[in-house]
Length: 203
Image (cartoon, rainbow, N blue to C red; front, side, top):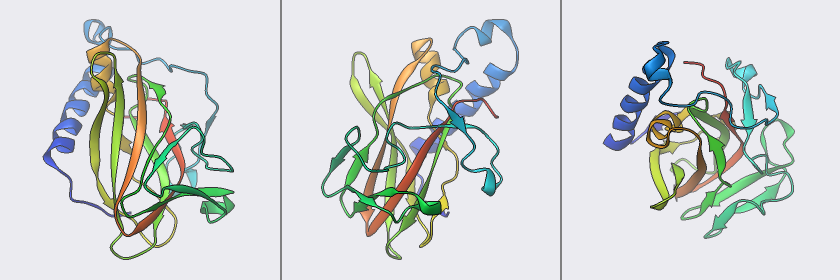
């Protein structure tokens, strides 16, 4: 999958996350005590991207397989769940026409949840979509951080691993945070399916 049009903000965010991650895995007791690196729930783990060279274990975001229901996702401007048409015989997928947006339910993350991945495809050569990580801040309310703008291929492919910024959030909150994933179609139309978060530190 080809990624493009990154803004400076995601680049700065990536630099911050990388630096803080090195502090976590360095083994220094004072630094390690700043954030939590234990899994924040007991979700079932699978290896959905093993066929693509990624043997990491992931947890499925609630409703992220789009198999029959989207009641726990927030859909707007024509975003909808459609039956079939998913990768590897999946029972359903999320369809995003131009201008549509879909946001997952909030799920817990901490420094042990550094990345997320999903499967996607486009419906035209000019299809592009924006991915954002939305944090539930106690004082500010939902705060959306852009990950980047991406172009999909015409066939189902896994996305590259994307940062949740959970390491940064772990330092700010001192522990577990609540995060949602938001997909917004900018041009054309796209499909998204099987949205996963990596609950293990693999850096």
